[in-house]
Length: 341
Image (cartoon, rainbow, N blue to C red; front, top):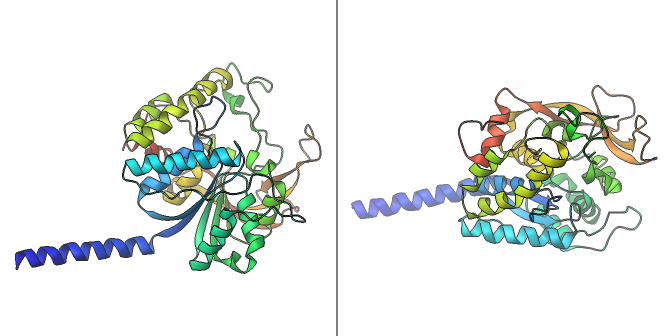
């Protein structure tokens, strides 16, 4: 009887686990992963992917690669390498579907990609949330290919957007590189590499959460954080090692002790929404009239309150809650206490 009872208990536990997995939030990750150890290649995609894959709280139903920080092929190879490394640590992560290698154009959309078709299929099966870590090309292409399924996208969490007149200058409050012209000026790359895709997504009516630079600059990941991260397994150790040159570049050229983990913030919005203060803003893709240095180029701008030019209300996450930094840092370090910064 005791053996039978044990078998029944194990079976019940397995059924409960399967039920929990089926009810878990369905997530699609779209990424321009570039975490290959190069000094100017941002490892934040891989930090975000690791946090999502290791959480156990969501169901990753698909992954797609897109051009951006690197070419689409390199991004896909990086994501495939991550899938292999994560599997070695017992963490399931699907291989990436190849996506767009060039920008989306409404009048002449790019040829069908496996990513576009796979995303449409996933949407046909059930609603899902998209975590967009690169340009929105694959998402816009899917919206064009299967417009009747656009309503199945519950939300898009997108790393991009800024206020009018805001220059992405990481050294703006770090001496001795505090004056504009010292240290690099970053672009809002996910928007600027494909403005048409950003406009398509914005006007689609799908719920959109922006995770802008303005939020990411409120947290720095340091060498101590990477040390703690490396202890979490072979996959984490590999990502941490490939982040060292990026960290060294930030310290030497940007003038900060750590780097801003842009894409990790998007993962955190999914996994620890209580870490953030998010508000309703109004957004549009248009020229930034306050910055004319780069010509008449359109960017994704959000305004608080509406400035009369916005197309629609969206959600924008701008700062942390009282313990938000600790919660986000723990997604990487796995520790219960915030590392020193």
